[in-house]
Image (tube, rainbow, N blue to C red):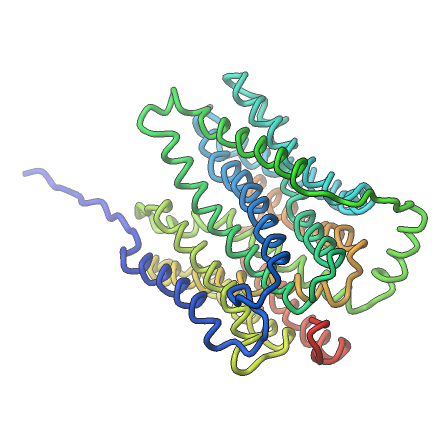
Length: 448
């Protein structure tokens, strides 16, 4: 008599997706009833010109996030389809982060000098070129695509936030409503990544050989629409910055301010931990040998990130407003504890998915909060350079982890998670010190 071995397939329950969706819906649409601010994104008293500015910017940002989402979701599948081995994938990742490390130190400075509108157009152009390259060649050079997309991702990490902050101040809008755009950027970025997954799966369909280039066509269309929209519908005052003056200002306002060093350290730590998570989350879930439907877990993680971003206005404009540095200390500690548990090689999938959702909920809260603090301490004309410079050590740490852990296998995944956890605890310490050294709580509507 034969023995039948049943395979164990784990997938999240439908109720989890429903819960995250309902929680996001309630968090957004109940906010006006509990907000103590006179202006919210949902208040009819908000200036029509500001709403028009915000919606135009968010539309551009959604298109840009869609391009990033398609490249990240479809990239690994494309490599596997063309027979690229695991070792070669690790090498491609290493090359990508090597490029990001070398260029991140001065890419933001260059974008500050030439203007953020041109930087955003450069981002779209890189995606357009990669999409066309993939379309006209059956087996494109993954090296060229990898380098171009690494540069595009580096630009994406700072140019849109900087551009929005510069335009917001130039148009004379109140700074206390700038935070609404920050958390909406995180919210719609996560939503765009989910939409990119759905779009890529739909375009691939059942005939993979015929539809393998379809996501590239979608990326080209998005890039062209975004370029046209930015060029025709968004004006920017020409930049007249001189490198010598910029260098002097950067030294005076960035290098000589210890508070900005604390902000940069916190930004580097969360960038490293989130990037490490996305590299290792799938191997961690399948470590016990069970089959896991990762495509169903991915929306849960991003949905939790969306939910975390909606918590920001509740904390800053709800019934009891909390200082940014206070809740960031606890958010960083929670993220550190989550990765500490994962570092101990815990393998119960249900618990891991719960911890991962908590991790991303905290990330969704932290990212727009750090953008808020940058608005307090960093001059807008130096913002891109400060962000890109803070990402350089994080990219170096990621490259080291990939080489030692992924290529040479000298360190395990648990050790990498432990390093990321220590970095998050260090970021919590940075926020605690920043509270002691930083500015006093915000006293009027013209300050954050």
